[in-house]
Length: 223
Image (tube, rainbow, N blue to C red; front, side, top):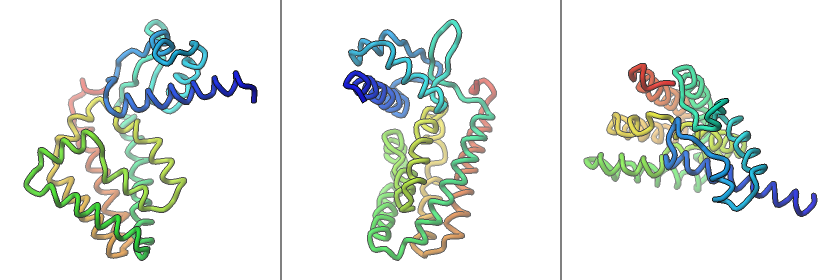
């Protein structure tokens, strides 16, 4: 690969990672425009790598292109939510089952116990838990790592920005936090008991419940 090609590829990766981080951190909102020229100035690159990065993000489902408005952060429809949560249910259920299979590994058990202890710290302090969720959904991040399956981790990591860019993410983080903690602890108890079937089932129920909370929102919330 020539030097110029390498530099262009590096610029594309930089733009992709930065915009993904912006969406995940909700620094840019669903429906907000993404302007090529502004990104080119921000990253001190030409518009070619920026355009390629935007196409890559559109293929991931994070952006959409409008004929007149250019690029914008994608807003989710009800069907988008259903499809996303179908995939999350399958993958995260499998991650929990694999974690239960590997719980005999001292490192996996120690990490699961630490995660459980972290969750129990929020008993009686739900506002702090909600604030933690706004920064990072640690339970779902670490569940993938407990699976010890690198491909599964990669797939879930790719879904994470799509989940966090939902136009109602702020709503769901503040909804049913006590139930969320209890469900997470129950999943970890199944993992620590080595009960892979129960861990899978509980995780799937948890994901479906989150989906149903979103689908119950008013029609004007959706694209």
